[in-house]
Length: 105
Image (cartoon, rainbow, N blue to C red; front, side, top):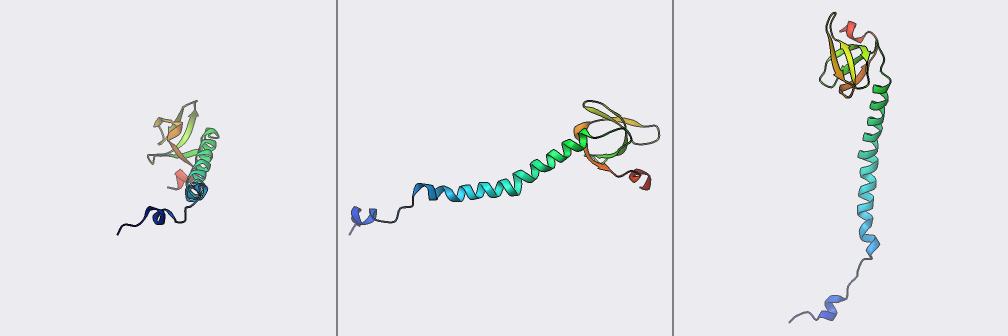
């Protein structure tokens, strides 16, 4: 009535390295589709922040548009209106705008 253990043990056993192939493929896909593009974008963001200079027009991550009036090590001063200047951390700068963008809005 029971299956003999000799009969049950005979079967095709996959080798050890073939069981890791799907995990390697998934990791490679994750690297090229998620990790690598995110690292590239972060590198471009750091380069943009390091290249900021007085007179550049930027937008912060909170959506504030302004013109750079002073650049420090960690803080940037933004002129958001004629007489209003605010200090913002460099890491809060989201994007650099083309010259004249603020006036055209």
